[in-house]
Amino acid sequence: MSLVAGSYERFIWGYKLKSRKHSHSHSLALTPLFSFPSHLSTIKAVAVAGSAAVSGGNDDTIKIYDLSSSAEIGSLHHSSSITSLSFFSPLLSPPSPATSSPPTLRVHSPSTMLTPLYTQDLKVHKKAVNSLTVHPSGKLALTVGHDDCLAMVNLVRGRRSFYCKLSKEASIVQFDETGEKFFMVVDDKISVHESEDAKLIVELDNRKRVLCAAPGAGGILFTGGEDRNITAWDTASGKVAYSIEDAHAARVKGIVVLSKNNGGSEEEDPYIVASASSDGVIRVWDVRMANKGKPTPLAEANTKSRLTCLAGSSVKSLKRPRLEMLNADESRGAAAVVS
Image (tube, rainbow, N blue to C red):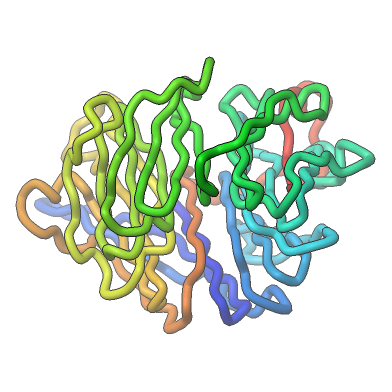
């Protein structure tokens, strides 16, 4: 398992989550992989899939990393700040999606080292793009922007297929694990919608501003923000399933779901969630312990920097991926987006 974080100070931080199993306990340790100033200005977004990672910042650049060798292996240059990155990765060797501050969206092909798949940027929003999410099918993406609008992009044809005005500007949009639902964050409110027709299912009230969110299994949605908590919402009932109060001493800026119980033993497969705060602390939790009082982090690292974003991969092996070239069968249906 691996984690990557970005900071205001231009630094990118990489960690490997090592498991140490003893006779009566399950302990973890965050082992540093790398740390260096990879950008010329603030890093705004990071994404991880397997052993591949990308970061984007205010220097109009996307950097590409190989976590198996702890090295930067390339970069993509854009025309403005990168605000969001997202992988669509049905395979271990993935492509990468991203968003940026102009009202445009770009798609990249993994078969040519993340080179542009479309020759022109797609004009999706009238103002800067805030967030992007790619459907599990890889055929479409949703975006929200400063123009107070929600847009749908057809990634097969490379064009915007839907565009509507929202009541307020949304900061985050995200599909759930199945792709049947998506949610949007507007300040302290999270709205859950049907993907088929965007029908509102339920609205969640966090009371304080939500800064990050990540979908979990079984309709659970994890959020974090100015309340410094990690809250798990049951999106079916609209109620809080459980919460880790005061998970951090500062605002929670990133949440990653690293593993899930998929029919295995709970003792052997804890539900692991990682979080990062603006004071530079990264913590790893077994969230099943939330109902047994305030849990103790399974692992912790202090970067001593102002973290802005967090991403991770639940792939336990960091074997070197074939990033140089994929054949036609492997790359079919894969897409990377920059907006």
